[in-house]
Image 1 (cartoon, rainbow, N blue to C red):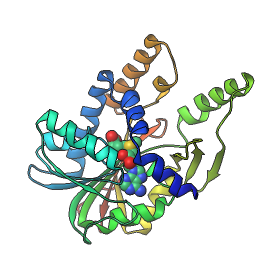
Image 2: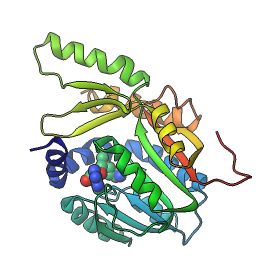
Image 3: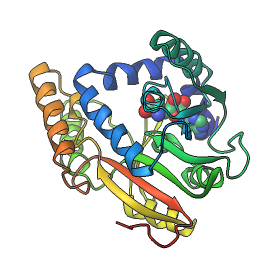
Image 4: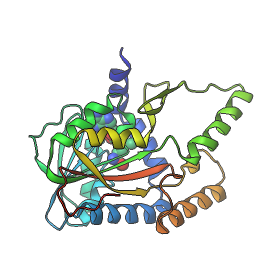
Length: 274
Ligand SMILES: C[S@@+](CC[C@H](N)C(=O)[O-])C[C@H]1O[C@@H](n2cnc3c(N)ncnc32)[C@H](O)[C@@H]1O
């Protein structure tokens, strides 16, 4: 079975989505998420009633934030398990949006179908990231804006915390995942077949520029995700608070793990580039 296919099969089932829900849907992270999505809506310049595509929408917990901002959201994901959980979640929240099954490598939408696109934490799992980016650009209208959240391979988290964790694992005789350094970033494959890429942000920006996209905003996301590996709830709470503080004071995105990038297609005069 090819790695790409194995990854698709793995993402199609429910367990991995439930694992993400456990790690990332913590009430202590809500304040960061609310701030981050308010920042995205303001930076892309979406107004009530505007259409937005949430590419790789998963359980739609974040897509729901766009709905609450008054946007007309279409969510697309290739995992039927994620989409049926998304439907149930939206029902519980009393929110409605369009949901469609589809692959980011061949999006089921016409060219220039959306004025806004968001892709939060998805490209990091796609081996053929160039093809997925090409599709996101294809479905975006001229002068439309796209927001991408990816983790950085140059963050303090990746440069210092991860080597420490790997060292501890090696010392205690535990397996460590294979890591490949590629121009797209640092790629790690979980045994089940899931790719986790820490992106080379300079590569991403220059790839997008090659597609006629201009970077108009670069903001910090979460400073670190150490809370997924430390067992103590006190330590987790310290990380949640620090992440929130870093985001609110607009700390440097270059040091942080999470990166929120906004690009504009065929920008005209008057747009301010970063
Ligand atoms: C980490 S989850 C993020 C979900 C959502 N964006 C969020 O932040 O809650 C990644 C999502 O991307 C979806 N995904 C990964 N590769 C995809 C592809 N090639 N086409 C469509 N969806 C994909 C997965 O099924 C999963 O729901």
